[in-house]
Image 1 (cartoon, rainbow over the protein chains, first blue to last red):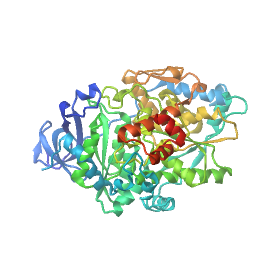
Image 2 (cartoon, each protein chain N blue to C red; image 1 turned 60 degrees about the vertical axis):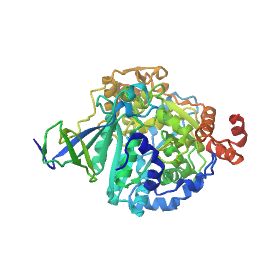
Image 3 (tube, rainbow over the protein chains, first blue to last red; image 1 turned 60 degrees about the horizontal axis):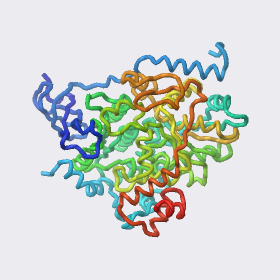
Image 4 (cartoon, rainbow over the protein chains, first blue to last red; image 1 turned 90 degrees about the vertical axis):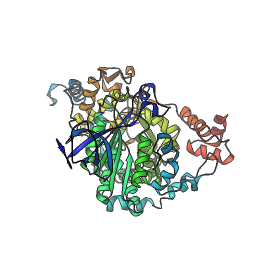
Length: 102
Length: 464
């Protein structure tokens, strides 16, 4: 159970496909405009998927579907890219010569 | 109860904006195509010295180092024609508060918002500007909301933008994230209306006046270090404010260096396409913003944009994604500087331009940006590969945005490809007539000549 004042993220469909601007590409026009907001849960308790209200950092009250408790960032530096080592080797060889430069 | 439907909110745009910027743009309008750009810029009430004082004393920003990239210059000379290979310098704007030049733009806006009594600021940006606004708001004790276009309809976020969300939150901002689409502007207006916060737009005169110090510092630093002015200043170009402010600052310092715009070539990709959103590896500094904003600046989030790059641009060149990634790696490998890729767009161009200029000439690349998880050459290439982008060594000319990233097989293949300036200038003239729906008056012809850095003859010839 998620409790009042827990830090959560909510999701809102802001515009349905048919409510969207007319001057946008076809693929975008077929999907809704979605929004994610984080804040402290205002309901006494809730479960993921419930429609709830949160109080954001600036004190705004926003209603939406509860989608995460304690949302965090997991982005990183990605997988190994061998080409980057090759670039390093190429430019060092041109500038400093041969295998002894390192 | 306010009507918050899309059409109703958009219809209230002008009144919302007037309240949120605290500036009446009507004062500068002529009623025809022209408006008084310099009067609008002067309406900030801040001289360059006053802006410098705000930046240095209040926010402790600016005065960033200017470094000579001796190894990159040497590398360029190793395959340049005899006697060619201009010296390359870079202004390390990443060392600013929040990690980019954008904080110069934010500082004056936040200072103004505080002075006018606003309780908070909102900015619509997926770029470094969000962190810049958040950092200045933190210092000024103002609340801050950053609205981002971040995800595609599958909920997959561009790593570079996610990193910027993290940084904004770390600096105390509330981050509102949206899926792809220009209706971000609609949500932005709703939030301005709901909060009565200041619109810390990138495109107000406050923001652009803030960048003037960057150009001014470049001229001063070159004079101190080299005893002379730079010959060429290369600016990464998207919305146009970076170039506009820098060029105005150079001119205020009495420096007449050639001003070159550089953008990453993303031709063929639609910026509002949900499917193509995550097929690009650059979320700023690219032609998808650079070209339309150059040829019609007033598409921004204020009635009249203070960023008007064609007024100051001497040349516009494009580089490919693979070339910028390659340059980013070269900068780390040969100069020991690890920086964000998007900020190296102008460096990739400068590396190519150096080979076309004599050795005694000076090229200044006027920014770097911070790097970190997500907004890193490794993270971006990894993300591209996962999205099916074909990454390989070869001839960058063969790169197809959204399908391939071609890393140059040799650094001599990095090129700065000239855009057609006559075409860009003509587009601006045609757009100005089309968007305003007005027949050009005599004063409009002078205005359009200034807008395109041309003369009355050019404007008249291309109005026909």
